Length: 525
Image (cartoon, rainbow, N blue to C red; front, side, top):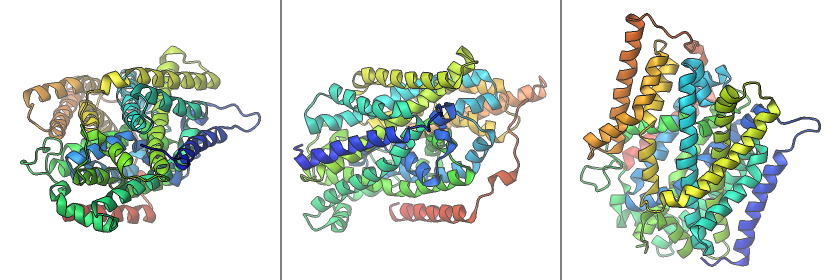
């Protein structure tokens, strides 16, 4: 990709802007020393629009731009179900989960598990999430973003990985979540604007220069098989998106686990000014989610229609940047890709640090740690996490064809167990700590066994089956302890139905989102 002076100016200017804003918002008033609430929860000061923007910026990473465009090239619009179902999931999380989290005043997801069950569950899940963020999430974002960087600048993937890590570290480690969240507001603008530029140019190319709207029509004519939202069993990619399971099965498990119980997502909500702000923020994020397939899936389908010369699916988006984006706009388009990468990297680093500091260091290693020590440990853990990810990213992911599907499958090994732990912990007072521990331990073995016994079963269906098995284990074990051993939970979550009341704005916005989703699935069934 040949960058002009203007392209370089836009791209470098973007990097400088993000670093400068991150450092500026990280300043503290004279005499105030940054404490754990400041560092890990942005002083609980985020308004709804910052929450919504930060959620999307943190979620839409190279995993989507590169990975989902690659799946769009291979599978088609059906892969956008992850985005569309996420919009519905955000409404559920805002209405039913977050009121409880805010009421309990937690910092982390493992901390909630300690409140509801016991410290065994907290510690085991804390260790799991730390490993997941470092070895799956951080490595994936680094590697996929580096693929695009290597195409643009002609550098090795390893040096591109190092460059990304350096920029992310430069503004996020000092400022904590406040720096991450407020720079995300800027990054989501670049992300959507720059992404839409690439989409427009791709559709214009499909139409032969007659405009993006005409290009969409041509795309529907040239590749109608790429616009099936619900795949038939004859589709070669049915195993990735198994028909009605998308609407009524395992995809709910994946989405609820990610949006409802994932630290680096929920942490933004916990940093809100109040419950109303966080609920509006999640609805705002749900509206943005409806736009994301235009940015990350349609370009992949356009690359297919343009007969992109690529050796692997995940090269579709870099191919578009290299082939279609003209001089003067490449800097903006590439800044969008980097915005997605940097926001996700900084978010994951901060959440890894939050879990280690609050659930491992303060809970077990140094319970009497003061606020200054907690912030210092948080910064050290952030740095350590990104260094490890830099070292393992290329060796771990270099041979994968569709990395987005790789992520979904292997996080799917643990998602059913996480959903069972939280859903029963939130809404079933009889769930016991021993049953929860058994469920947590059984999650991965059950997933592996189901994968081995039913190798031809789509992984979303496997997730649904494992969820049912783990739910049965939780219920049977808990009832056995309740009735036979006389063991009842000593600390169920207390709340009444008034906690889940929402205002008119939230209800109307949620209804509008559901109508849009219904229309999309009816049109592209």
